[in-house]
Image 1: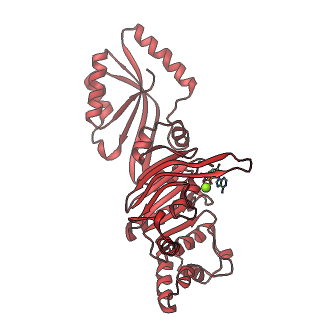
Image 2 (image 1 turned 120 degrees about the vertical axis):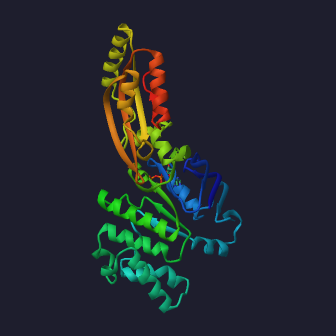
Image 3 (image 1 turned 30 degrees about the horizontal axis):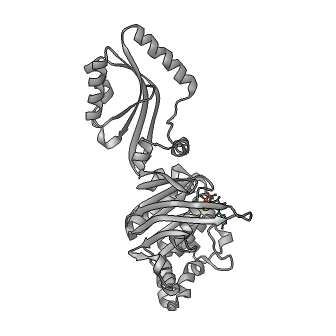
Amino acid sequence: MIKIDHLYQTFKTPDGRDIHAVNDVSIHIKAGEIFGIIGRSGAGKSTLVRAINFLSKPTAGTMTVDGHCLNNLSAAELRRMRTKIGMIFQHFNLLSSRTVFENIALPLELLGVDKQTITEKVDRLIDLVDLSAHRNKYPKQLSGGQKQRVGIARALANDPTVLLSDEATSALDPETTRATLALLQKINQELGVTIVLITHEMEVVKQICDRVVVMDNGKVVESGTVLEVFRHPKHPTTRSMLADVVVHDMPERIIESVRSRILASKEKGRVAKLLRLTFVGSEVTMPVLSEMTRRYDVDFNILQGQVEELKGTSFGMLVILAECPSHAAFGQASDFLSENHVDLEEILV
Ligand SMILES: Nc1ncnc2c1ncn2[C@@H]1O[C@H](COP(=O)(O)OP(=O)(O)OP(=O)(O)O)[C@@H](O)[C@H]1O
Ligand SMILES: [Mg+2]
């Protein structure tokens, strides 16, 4: 659907230095996906988005949307392609002198669509985004969430196959963010529109994305399904961005006390380990931990626990200090956990 290959976008600073805002980025996005691109401020996300719809010509690399390589298109073909890519923005970009209806109608007017078709289409979109009660209001009479719904309806006016969202929920409170994301998910499911969500918030990725890439300093530093990235974040940037949502790093104070308990166990001839267990709700069908305790004589203390919803699937994480009679018993217990779809990672080795 969208194939970004070895894309570079380089800017020159006034003193002649090169800034590699996008630095050898390759991303393949499938039709019908909700794809997240997350990164801190300055990571290159907006520059990448401008390249996706060719608002700026990349320094190098290719961009293919819906089978059309944008590098080779004439200006007229590019304009036509862009109508297939809807865009929503952090600050909504609505025209203050136009009503809700007129804002949504604008892209159709620009294409010279006849009045009756415009009215039918715009009213259908107003229904879709649930703004019928506000049809003839002006932007200044609307809340942020309502303005963003106008932005979404306007972006859908030309029946795009792709919707690009650059920080569309960043100016909204958490509850309005959830409602706006739920609307985007509905649009994805009902209209089959592929959605690319640019964000600096893991919370956004967690709620609706299927796959995600993490950008840092112009590069993709991590990619995978949202579940994979939440379970096993590899890059320090990912881990620190995840920290608002899932705790992956234990405080040093706890680590210290755990170390001394591990040593104390060893002196007693037993084996103690600090473990992180992760599991997906639908995969775990029996009380695995109590069964493990019974079968292999494992004692454990829970030091940290969390259950999160990832696009409607529950994802759990427990950090436990486990103590067993021997290494062999520990091996059997960890095999038992894996067989029952609980992932196990030793934190202190
Ligand atoms: N037109 C430009 N000229 C020079 N440098 C630019 C230009 N556009 C962006 N940059 C630089 O490229 C880098 C990436 O910027 P970009 O706006 O893509 O980041 P971002 O990830 O969208 O950040 P934010 O989360 O703050 O929106 C930054 O260092 C920025 O200063
Ligand atoms: Mg940006």
